[in-house]
Image 1 (cartoon, rainbow over the protein chains, first blue to last red):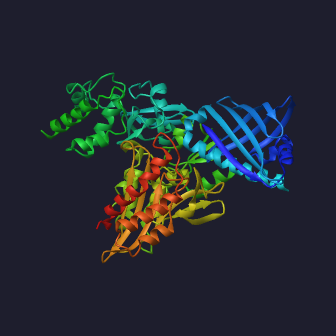
Image 2 (cartoon, chains in turn yellow, orange, cyan; image 1 turned 135 degrees about the vertical axis):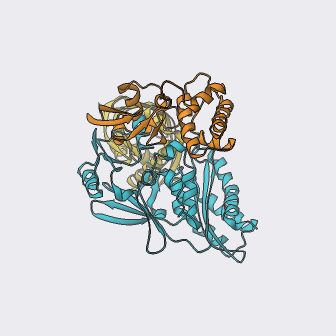
Image 3 (spheres, rainbow over the protein chains, first blue to last red; image 1 turned 90 degrees about the vertical axis):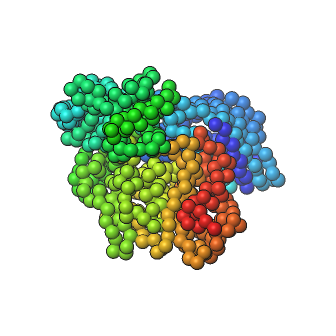
Length: 148
Length: 155
Length: 281
């Protein structure tokens, strides 16, 4: 499924880029993100807890920045699985930042997310809504933190 | 493990099973009553339909431990003395059986339905069996069979 | 996994309070399906089947009905006291899945699961039902409209469960109707419209409408109802009410229909539902 979102941040492009490339800054903005580890060469490990009602899980994610053009573009691949390998997730994402004036930045991201395994039985319709809601929550958290 | 007894096809059965074991798994694996079929395990296909205290239920959606002491009738318990039940016989006579996988669920559902509604219309039969899927898509003769059984019992 | 079979509500609540990973087991129609699909892994199940008070139906002093949480959909579907406006509940229950599932699934289970594409939530909102919740700190009542919060998420707090649903007395001449559109008999709704309508001298005197499968929760729009009240339910009024409901809807895209398709169903099903509830010109 394709998840595409955009949001505006009242901060200069260079600052927003700096924030978005700092795992210590981004992790607290990601809903359910439990911890993040920088393993070097643009690669990170993170654990993210997600749930819909009684269905709850934690994904262990490997995140790799495959390509970047500071301060405007990054291509990121995320692979992950639940502790038990019962579901696997892959996401290919592109992040684009555009300056809109001196003190405002437009953030756009597009992810192609694939989930296989037990959670895929759950139905893509609700999963997509949930992903969108988490994306909106991330945008809100990130905006507040970057503008602070 | 949980110790329970179930009355299955008129016989008391003592079982020791984990809490997550469904009635379907208990029937098939613990009691070797394999007439009830396991297909979707989600309550969608109806192949596991059995009677619980006389009403049809999807055995895959019932935990065995949760129906301790209650009365179950499976496809194996419909006939008497080695003879097919009237509904089973009607399915045979109407040529309603193709691969046969959905048949035990169909026949159990139809048996319960006819007990409640002895003179159904074809539409009512279709609705009553809407929870029993046949992937051979041989529905027409299934409905013929239920009509045949209804006609015979009324005669 | 532990398995408990308490015989009183207090014992059930104590067991649930003692273990945050325990789940109450009502009929199991959804919970056991989720267990089979390995979507949930509760540490314990607290079966509610042996708790007598959850199986009762009684008239309330106000003239409504109090429905115990463990009543099966099959019982509701044949409950003769669900008449007038409250017939919307009987009709919705009668259209849940198939006979075998209706014999298993329960009112409380469906309410607690909070699936917006299931049939009872919209009917409960249209009927202005109140959900009676029991928990470690006693009982509380929550209007159905505020009870459903998100996909599979309700106002139930940790350790709480649904004890009963209270249907209010509906206006004298009210008629309830549940209009469900599904791909095949017994499927989840692609879209549904639950309505409680009363007409007086050819004009709408009372109406409550809730859409199922139209968003994360049942969709109700007070302004849409206000547009209908006092009207003769002419095509113009219905079309404006439908536009308000459509604007408030945010359905999912899935195998049962695209979001756009579901939105297109809103005016059509609303028209049918109002006509079936006696508002036909």
